[in-house]
Length: 299
Image (cartoon, rainbow, N blue to C red; front, top):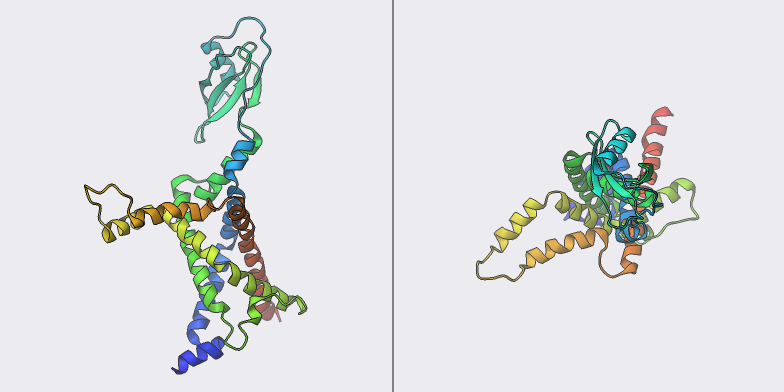
């Protein structure tokens, strides 16, 4: 009872809170830059469908001049342009006034699509607009950290740590029953150190649900097998029942929750804006750590 009373009134003196604070501090410093990258790319990728539609690849018109080059000749001129890469014809449109798309596969890299004039063999540039390529790059960074399956597994561990940050942050946020209301808002009239702490505290409280959801669903998107196994254990499949199970519906919604794919533009806007908060949390957290640890050591 005494420990509960201390937690409610003076949590700063409770040893468990002190331990969770250290976990929160060092976890945040350790994965902070990772969280910044994942959060910023996530805010952009909320609008992935819109970006893909905006930068949808379009055919490239060419001037019809003389006979068309054969497939072998097109591959030969493309090989001259990209001497170290494997070449193939990606698309050869029936419309004679459109460029041919050649597939160029650099060693160790994904296939690229490049335009070539089917009459002159002139290289006309990348077939995918810059916006499309940047969106694809951001998606690969967000999903796989640009390193394939290894990066995806690392991403899953990062998502687990994000869950840990949100839970420990919620415990550390609790200031006591006498002053909890003050911690819901930013005190802009205080000195800059207090404002920095207040921003970290208030922003963290109001966004902890989102951060937890993003981390938890991120774990599922990386490691779906344990979740599927849990659903099978709790609600085994029945051969004569083809209706989706409740657990299947929940897992289906995890992807929608992660990227805000429900509720229309308002949900996407909320997801995109709140996605900017974790980078602010990292910056304010580093400032607090600097003031508490580094400056004290130097003084």
